[in-house]
Length: 526
Image (cartoon, rainbow, N blue to C red):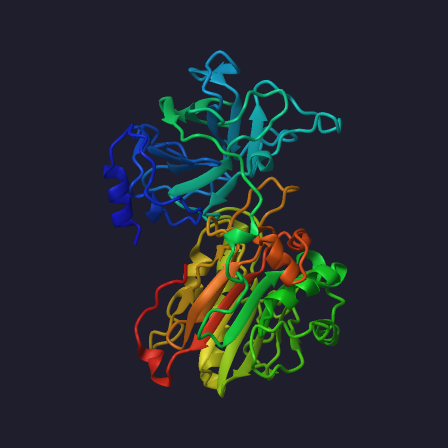
């Protein structure tokens, strides 16, 4: 799938700074980079290093800069979990007389570190993304001089799983203490350098300069920019599903915000993750039944029913529905293979809708790690167990469709996703990964937490049986993306979605015709 795109990217010219025809979208798919020429091309000259920089592409717009990095042929890398550190050195004000000279680049003001060193254990690999100024040093013990965070310049990254390519973006115009103006001018100069834990250089590109369009600061969204209700159900859809990791029991701990969001989104089915171990299905149902009808549909609305997964301890999953709900022994519980005492963080239900039976799985895969490590291998085993459970339930229940939704924690390989979207049965039944975007249509990130070393990215997915169901619309909900009139119309506060480090995913579905199970593929919803 990526080969034609790779050949196209490698064949484009170097040095031309013409902007791309369409704005770059941060989604980890890279097709929108096809018209962007290379800013620099590096030879394949670091065969023994985990990264061998090849092509770097830059795109800009009045308030954002986008970077696409080719990490080297044959590489599949988690850029936030390197053994060493990949540094993007930036002369952000385009003035070589300010900042410092580093690795042959004069005027370096800002350093973006992809996997910065662990300052508490410099002999061990670090994690995440770091931001440094060459003219300012923060002190974690001094509130007046806090260390810089990548969130200070709005860094986001895709994909979170291992890949040969990585794209990141950052905001122009950030005001960093004691640091020259950041990317406000008409150009900047940069260089990529890979170092090991001893700060020895393993690979580097030549310096490159990018000419930028005029800077314009970000502006609050205005009512006139959102003519139609962004939360309205997609036409011709009959089922709205919300998947949401409600961090550390936020459904109860931040109940007012949670209920405002769920009222505004008005789902028929909710796949919840991270309910506390002391929560009960009855408590969750009682809380959800406080949600008044949101008015998104005229269909009769029933009381909420909840199936709470047995596994997960402090991070249990649940399926809630305003529809008849039962379960199947193959779906609840799902055991870790070879361990009768180890239950996965899943909840599986059979939901009745429009005379059909729908398997709904709320899942929360193992967190953390990187490609090939213990956490990654465990996610793969969990995905295989969930896949097997769904296969058995399909045979036992003669179900008409499947939804698997939740927190996939894809910070290692993407194999768990590939396993769950592959063929489920001998007849070739496969699942489709819906591709929701945030309401501003610029990113598909579903996770953010300034307190963590990692930057915003996509961890959450909704999969559906593409032969039986079709997605008519989808979005990742962030309250800050709503204009004031829609916040007021839906009774929301701009800070409501901050109750969790994960954002809700909303998908509007409808059934295909009964004979469509054998029909072909379906394009993702963008």
